[in-house]
Image (cartoon, rainbow over all chains, first blue to last red; front, side, top):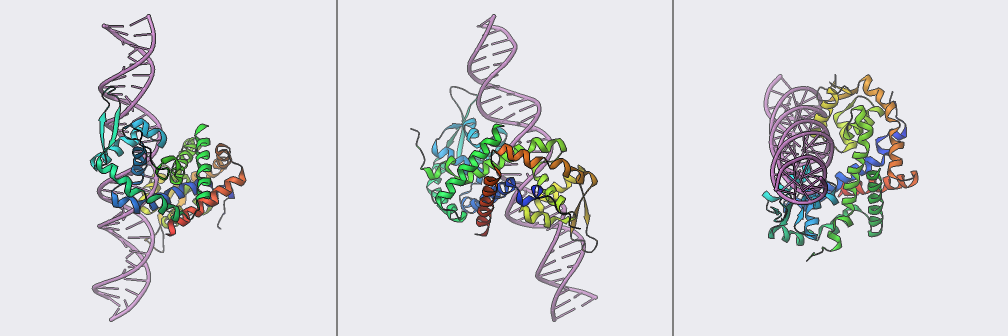
Amino acid sequence: MPDTSPPELKLETQLCFSVYSAAHAFAQAYKQHLEPMGLTYPQYLVMLLLWDQDGRSVNALGQPLHLDSGTLTPLLKRMEKAGFVTRQRDAHDERITRIYLTPHGKSLQDKARAIPEALLCASGLNLDSLFDLRDQLTEVGRSLREK
Amino acid sequence: MPDTSPPELKLETQLCFSVYSAAHAFAQAYKQHLEPMGLTYPQYLVMLLLWDQDGRSVNALGQPLHLDSGTLTPLLKRMEKAGFVTRQRDAHDERITRIYLTPHGKSLQDKARAIPEALLCASGLNLDSLFDLRDQLTEVGRSLREK
DNA sequence: CACAATTATATTGCACACAATTTGATGTCA
DNA sequence: TGACATCAAATTGTGTGCAATATAATTGTG
């Protein structure tokens, strides 16, 4: 009676599911490294951008992340409450909210340096196949979005 | 003054981000196909499992999806309200809730058959590289979880 | 300079995810 | 059989995502 689906409609066969599932697995794997410093995984992605370039606008954070203000505004408020960043209106254009790292937020960059290496190990990949996989996925993402 | 981060801490160089980002892109790409039939993307994943095997328990849905009852219970209630499934306690073990497709839910499988092909095109991949990518991601997911 | 578009962010409402706890049913063993 | 561990779901609380709408500041145009 197990009326089996055609393979194109099997969960395990689908690329989308392997991506969905790997994304959750990454978030879980990062959690053990991030929780001790009080960051969630999406907050960590924001920190990556701020460590690289402080004082970005909400838009300048959302563009690379593909996130809009509906997601970022409450996330950034939580990060402000937690003491990682401050939110200040731009002096010359009051429409813009700029996000600045606090000293505490800046200091976390040192603690974060060990994370990529740890995740590389956990992923079971070598550097070459990781870069390869990354580039393929970036390209698939671009392709899906452009249509 | 743009104090640039080391490459290991750059958002764009990270595999985790390309996965995170591709997962969102897939969800968006599926949306245009699923919205007309009233399904969300996670609900569609549940339907894939039910089309393949009806009457599963909540656990039997959650295991392949790596989702727990905290996510599935409200999701399944929404699907019940929308008329895709019914939720019934197992007659022999009242602890178990079994999920059954309604006739309407079953009938959607036909409409869904066209989706994988459409997404394959949108992804810009050929079948070989899709399977290859899928298998690599499945393996990375497994590796991250087993830690 | 008035004033209608545009821009940048914020708000609201809904749908996941997931940790932690609770509730109710089943199994076990003294 | 009656206390107790176990098990499956459901509940609660917090944190994303995202569509749609609102608000306020700036820009462009006549």
